[in-house]
Length: 186
Image (cartoon, rainbow, N blue to C red; front, top):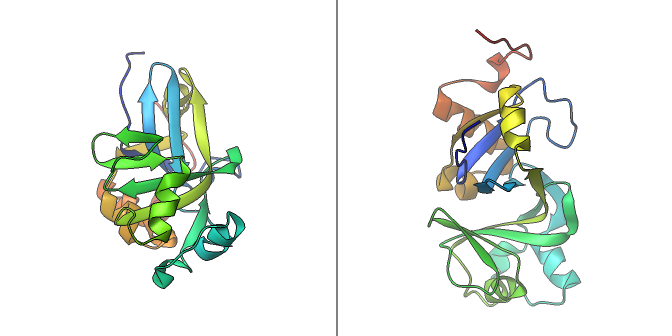
């Protein structure tokens, strides 16, 4: 299979996805290359808020309006580690630049800046990420486990978690409820 790059795309879990980790999930692909893929699930808030997370890691959070932002489950890999999707990308110690638009940062400096009101304009904080080995995502796509659609910063940062999946589906002109769990090949 020829290599294609799904970085800065959403993966929409098809209704037949039985893995409870990914069922009804919307995943933002941060990196996709010949070694594999890395993504962040963006529609699974957990019971932890940004204010609670900052208290746990002993950082001040001065912009009070950020205190109640939810932290998300980003995927089943390294669930004890924080990943920050943000826009603009900026220059942080450990940032993966996604197609020149969005940054995915794992270093503490971005959280320190957020806590001081000097961070990126848009942020989404997760614990964990989703990862695929070489050829695994391509295989899952060929098995109709996922739909892909170009990502939108509006969906990623402006919409509440529960509206992200339907909004991504609307880019395709499809309602998630009308998708069939059955698939076929012509």
